[in-house]
Length: 293
Image (cartoon, rainbow, N blue to C red; front, side):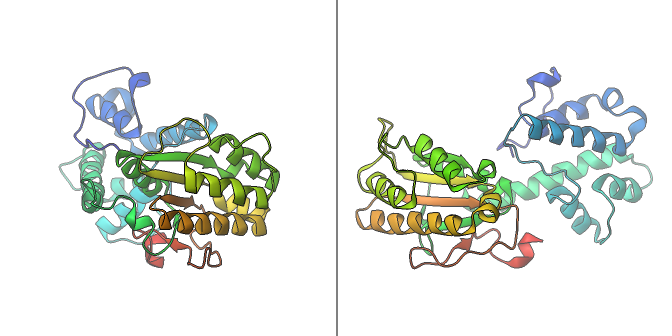
């Protein structure tokens, strides 16, 4: 979600929009052109198309307007209802007299973004010990909402960490894993593409820094997305990889180096055995089971 949540006041071409909120601000400026008849169902269909385009073009952007996603849950909590209504249907049904569904949507959108911004407020500023929240109790932290993972990596990047993104949803075999990690971390040509070799090379990175000439910065963050896909295809390897990373992160910490692993899962109930003699834990924003419902 953008850090600046103020509505845009300048009309521009839709292709110049930076994200879904920028796009919605353009609709706000000219609702008659974008939403014929003022129907939120039409807007909902448009946003579904936006979400489909993100998937087709493999763009990693948080999208809160899916049927059961953040905005829908927020709307239900706001109105105090529990139903299967979409956010569009709920707003149209609850729009008060003297207002329109479109006006009500944008009013609620502003409130939703304000609430989301307040949730992020405790993380504002540069912490005295960057990355400590992801190393204090575990070196492997789970995420269900992509938005929270994105915000975490941005915070770490702003603190000087090097972020390495790994798309585990593309892995169906252990070889896929080794190929992706070797490419991302620039492992040497002699890398053996097995777990023992991963342990050795990751150990070198944790102790001495990257194989390439990139700056080491505050530390290294391995950010996995869609890891549940790989865990389903190769459950033992998925567990062993996290165990290796956690063990190497612990050893790196002894040398005052930082290695952090952030793992996104589409399954809110996914579990792993302890890794590196430490548990795999959910991030503090989703630690309670109720936060992943």
